[in-house]
Amino acid sequence: MNNPSVLSKMLLLYLKVSGYKDKLNLKWWKKPSKATKPSKSLFNLHSIEESTFQEQTVWTLKPKENSSNKHILFLHGGGYSKSFLNYHWGFMSKLISSLNCSVTAPDYPLSTNSTVTDLFDFLLPIYESLVDNYGASNIIIMGDSAGGGMALALAELLVEKNIEQPAQLLLLSPWLDITLSNPQIDAYEDVDLILDRKTMQVLGRAYVGGSDPTHFLSSPIYGAIKRVAPTTVFVGTEEILLADCRKLKVRAESEPMVFNYREFKGMVHNWMFLPIPDAKKAFEMIVDQINLEPSELEDLVNADGSFW
Image 1 (cartoon, rainbow, N blue to C red):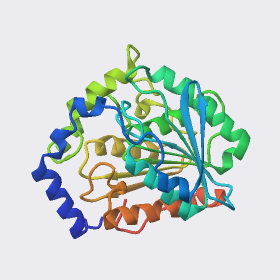
Image 2: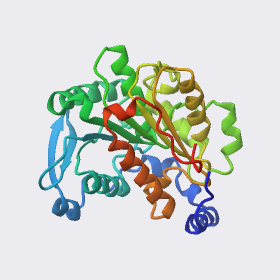
Image 3: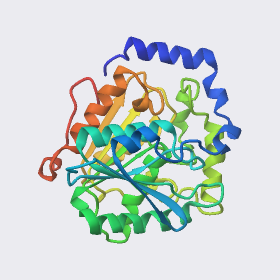
């Protein structure tokens, strides 16, 4: 693995000395998001439609003209308690500009007034509608953090219900086990400068309500993965979610599935959204992955020796 860039090292130092992690306490996680809709600049750049499904807002973003067949279902992170954050919109805008694709971004039910059951009752019909409109072979399900866990859980639900899989899954710093009970996490608690394990466990309990926290819809690390779509994981070595991403990698190696693993040395949670060279590299790899044709997904797609 490559060492992090100088700019990334400076950012890590800032996060450490500023006590950034302490600011992301329960009060912050439960505070409503301010970026629940695209900015005015995005409306100028793209064609954006707002619709409502089950009393929740669903955004569709497209190029102004000549959209490709590829369509991304983007599931945002936010500890199950927050709506979109500014960097989500910026990232989706970059995807549209780079791929000429369209994006569906549902503002799904949050744990403040809903549970995991409500979430998937909401997401499954949306996915089925996208299959009707775009065809499963043109759909990529992408999610970051909590949204990354949702993306894998949704794919596992599709297997259970015998519904056609999307072309790919892209999981960015995914939260795969809401219990965070993996003992290997102990080694990363102090180096993670963003996520606090105990805080995340509280958020996870709110998300599941009274249901089983190890059910695959809540914690997809425990689900059946053998027939899910080709999956690519991006994760940093400085985040507590690394342990379960490595656990998923080990599981995938024994299953008949296409699985690509991108571990970035020295990177923090959701680093791919930050203005640093390492994020640019990750974004380029994401674009290259999405651009692959179905026939090219039959074999593992390995990055160069700098990445796993």
